[in-house]
Length: 532
Image (tube, rainbow, N blue to C red):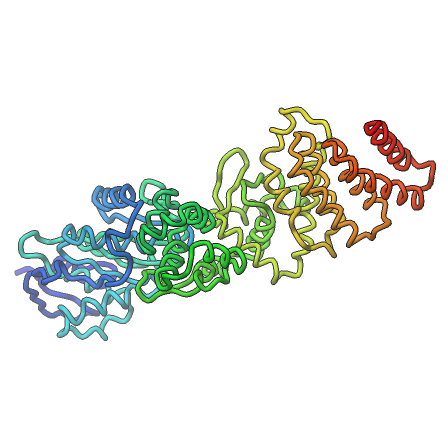
């Protein structure tokens, strides 16, 4: 008579065929009744807080695609909801689980990725395995595998799918690949800032559309407050970069103070930036556990030193696409491959977006976060100086006579030049900043945009007077620029004293025979001629 075949066990020493159960060489019988639905549906531990369904807007297509990803895989479906911190990954997973709870009659279990095995056992053991001595399973992975191998079946739809949600994955190898999945009845959905899976199994979550962002804000503060300050509400959504976390936090803050106007809220954000209470205080009723800056900080902490340095450099640019050629120009001594590896880190963590044609984009709040990080770096001034010098090279073709094609060719660099030209680091960067302001003056003067031209001319003059002194030749140049602007507008009385002051400086400092002195004489003569 032949010996009975031993039970089929998996790599965790767990019988995956039911009936007898093998744990570390011990055999015992385990008989579980069919899993019956509870009053609230299939067994689950879903959070009771988060957005109500009527407040969850702008994600219908993402919900549908996520459901498709989790249903069409033949074995274990792993669909990643990736995206930068605050884009609403956890909220989307929660809303999906609530909406599709009935599609997983075996249950839905929410797990923190960093402690997934232990939390799965904590969910299953008191419900179905109270009589099992789990001390015989010497690792959390074996315990989690046991629970899955003997998960109760449903009475009406055996065996009944189960959805396991691993939230906030930070280490794919350890937390996803190392998480045991026993049998094809289990579906695994994980959220992460990093983009590990291929696009076919990954849902990349983007920002809200402007109309959806406004609707989300309206759900918190009420339609009447939005209607009363419609333009300000739209500016508020734009300032927050249509980031769901920012909108939810600001909306909650406004909801708690009905007398606070949207205009005042916008003013506080512009003054205090990411340090504003509306972006740091997290209501207990939200899915989020951190404020905006704190959410970004999680990604920052795992960046290499090279990636952090690159991030700070990128934060020096304006709110527009950045050409990679500019970055290379700022860091000419960096190894090309190492610089690209640092860039890949930022892209993988959804902190930087590839736009194509050598351009990269930063979310406005990410850019704000990177800019603030420069205050903690000893090389911040070196990086800032590099950015100013690179933008000066990119704008050096500007003159007082430009064609339309020449102006259009500068379209991608001007937003950055304007943002940097407004810096207040005059003590360290006064001269190059004044030059950048002068270039912007010439650009707008050539286009006949005299109001803008005057702003940049006056700013250049102010910087040079304060940094270089009232009698410096560069100060004379700024005086001459402003005078020429007034002269072209027919504001001769305003132009004449500026021309005369510029001439006096050049005669005294450069001499009567210097070309710049001759230019001042010529300008003054033309002014006199224009006045008859």
